Length: 262
Image (cartoon, rainbow, N blue to C red; front, side):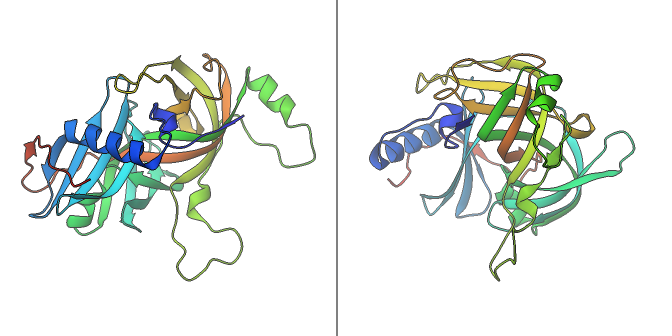
């Protein structure tokens, strides 16, 4: 089992706050930008490895930064998309075959700024999901996964998905809001260890099939996992969920600038 930061999961490891600030500003400056409002813009840097940073810039200062993985899996139909924080949305995942509800989920949205500017709600859409591993355990196969559940606690399927961020443990406080987390397990369909071309750090990138045949790309820090999972393995753990709906601003403007306030 490993525990890592969201940045380490995509090969961006730093030793101190100053290094982090300089690196983030440098990467975001290399990304593509689109204007959301007169004073708010969204900047996206994507590395060939799939590592991605999304920043919202207001008055030339970065006010929000999302590390994520550029998802390449088939989009999942969703409905009742609601912005519940500055960047987090709750939504309902739907079965792509018959449109039936699978479960709710909370996701940190790459295009949250566009959604917020358009009212913060969407009746239906299509989500391309991804995840960053916070802690993960790798089992050789489904048989080994079931064998590991040898205590008296409830047994979980090898393709379960629990949207843990959508409910509070115990009595929620008045300011509680959902978080973009889920507990899930799934079979590894693909696995590789790309290298972040800017930092030179490798990370593991896998494609997982979980409940209702949903597939999503997952990034795992290589610092505590010597070898990547392999096809047919079962991975389970806690994950930070991200995704994009493919939303476009009313009048998108793409540009490149190097003027961020440090």
